[in-house]
Length: 397
Image 1 (spheres, helix red, strand yellow):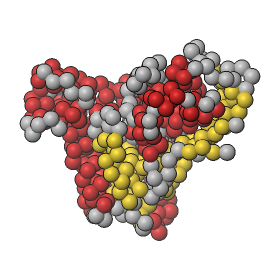
Image 2 (spheres, helix red, strand yellow):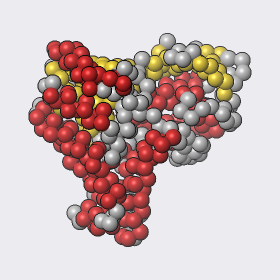
Image 3 (cartoon, helix red, strand yellow):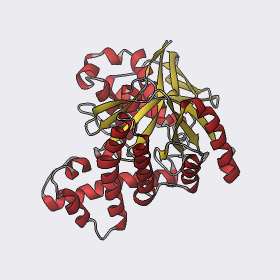
Image 4 (cartoon, one colour):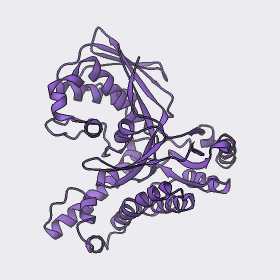
């Protein structure tokens, strides 16, 4: 038997910056997804405790599952591991989770991480020469598992069909590289730890799940990928106009003092791209480092300002907010939260609030009640949880 637990994550600051090479401020949470592998008799039989649903998968074959089905993620993982490291032996996988689905805490990536590591361990891939040659450390492992999810190649490990999202490795990095009681600032492409910031002992993170499911299927998938495609288009215009070959937008922005002005001129007549560019620059170069600095010196008021600025640019640059998430931010601050902003892919999902640890449970209860009174329909599926930065993914059992 081989089992792995992967936590979910809270992105404090850094909305849609990772795949553009930018900065994020993140932590793991104390809830997540556990995948347990036991010997099987045919293919990969996976069962979800949440739905008691069973799917039978054959690596290299399309399982023909409905869009958004959890089994699609397991299928992608099994297919990629088999293609990169060799045949998988028959197995049964039991999936358990106490992480709210489609909540913005990245239950889908937690499923990818836990399943991939459980299968890799069960088949001895993670101790093989091929694995060690391509995956040197946990940062590299996070990058590889992000490529499993989005379908990209990773060094010598050829890509396959992913789950359909054009995301980066923020989620996987937070899940594999977090430390208890600490936030981490990472930059990306490639992933790099910038610094760790202790989380104050007297504070807690309260998460409100809006009940508006942040699904990555259909129109929501297209909207999510639109933010990524916008970055690609801005970078393409920059490289074309300057003759450079910058690998990501963060590199372009950092290339000179005039780079942002040149970039803005290149997209000045496209309001969509201009807003996306400005959101990235503000979030990655000002908000994330400013928020990390504020926490490091214990300046909660400054952190609140950074969170408010992040919320502003989510609405004005990403256009990925819904009335429910904006209302949750407003209600949290009205109830006395020290800081608050939405997080995750957007178009639903969750909002975090910073609260005094001693009163966090009472705050969470009041916050949920106020939200349900205002939005009774999604409020039926809304929930809150109180947490603090937790540790990384690990073997279990």
